[in-house]
Length: 287
Image 1: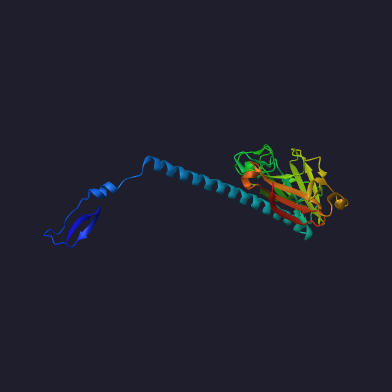
Image 2: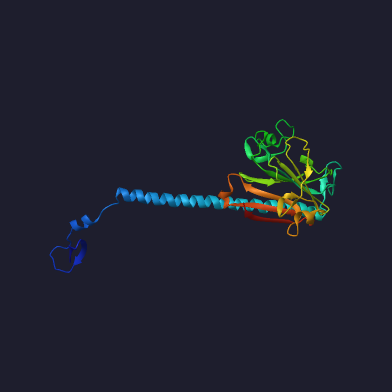
């Protein structure tokens, strides 16, 4: 058995040979083998870079859209929580009487776009400014409580124990929710408005807005709007005349991606609270 080279390929030969093994180094084989050229390497790298860029962009857009959808569903769920607490007459602990009772003013949601957060952890929200004896940030070793200057949004589920229609911090606090970075809840037509209250009492909705930043919060005015045209204010008595047959009087909020609508598939979250029935509707709509 011998080994020979045929047309540039190493093959076995059946020809008899006194040698047991014949090593054949085929120059034709060596001539047919070559590496990548510099141009081919550059083109390959360029194609891979383009594919990675497309994937990264698509992933980023998809992730931000999922965050938008999640924030919409959570805000609607917390509003429904407040409504159910009111509808079922759930009691809450009132430190003023050292006992539990149904809150005089019902249950509500306090939304603020100038939220306070800890100086060493801007995902840890707080209620009391630096120097206050109840500063949560100091207690949690996260710095001091500072104003985020309108860059972060949070909302609090609270029990209006004293019936003043406002959130009075610790005594009325039930649960706090922080909106994801770069997302903001907007309401009303005035961009200066930074705070809103939505309160459910006896299955009726009361909405208030303000642009003040200090404590106590003052200057609120009722702001119910037509759900089909948020620029039109209304009341239950003027609902049909103001909103027409296609609309209803209620409160409208949007959740927007601050860097730009185009980065979340040109979408925004839309949450409506209908005043007459106190029902909540939420959906993602075009910007």
